[in-house]
Image 1 (spheres, rainbow, N blue to C red):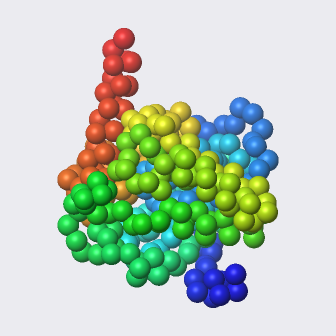
Image 2 (image 1 turned 180 degrees about the vertical axis):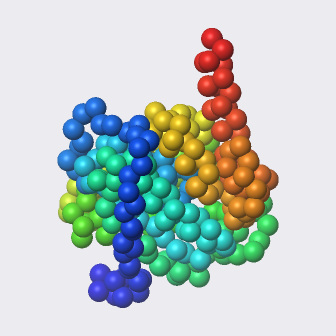
Image 3 (image 1 turned 60 degrees about the vertical axis):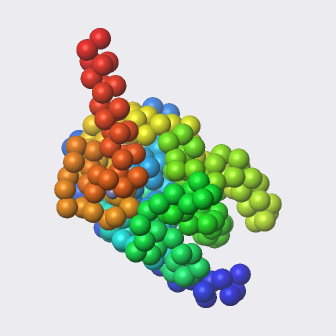
Length: 270
Ligand code: ZN
């Protein structure tokens, strides 16, 4: 533990708290779960939806992000914008939203040689996994998150992993994360619940979840402020958000948004 704390710089970003606006959609119907949660928050669509899910559910929510030498750090820049935006638009959630923790995991970039951390073409390897796969990344993220959560008195870890529309990453699988929950709880000798609210949702259903949690206001903030594109392209705002429109992440996001909008249209038509 001593070595670990010195190997990775841990900083906390104190976010400013803008004046709440008038547009409110998130009003709790029931008292929040008293447990405190830590959301793995990358600044992408999935983790932003998970953040809203946690803010709707728990009395206190903190966020954690990892800088591991991603090819493009635009996602990390989006984090602060999304957090400030949620604080400004949803006063109930702003009261629950605590510290943001940023961990420097540069060593993960050093030990992995993938299209996420190097200027390589995104291809599918013989293993069937895309070259964006960083071996063990989510396992490491959860371990570091658990270490922070333990120190902060937080007992729920929330991640946006998903088996439905995913790229086949084995560390996104439900069983992997359930096993991790057991290992972490035993290893810390403290109950640590791993929650993955998007695990069985399609990308269209993830947009639906955002809509149910925070209405069109939240959907619009996620659409325009979060980032998913593997290539870090924020030059063009498409109807599904910013991105190159061609990489696997953009294709998933675009098709999910189209299905979400199409589903809403068909409901209206009925
Ligand atoms: Zn893209």
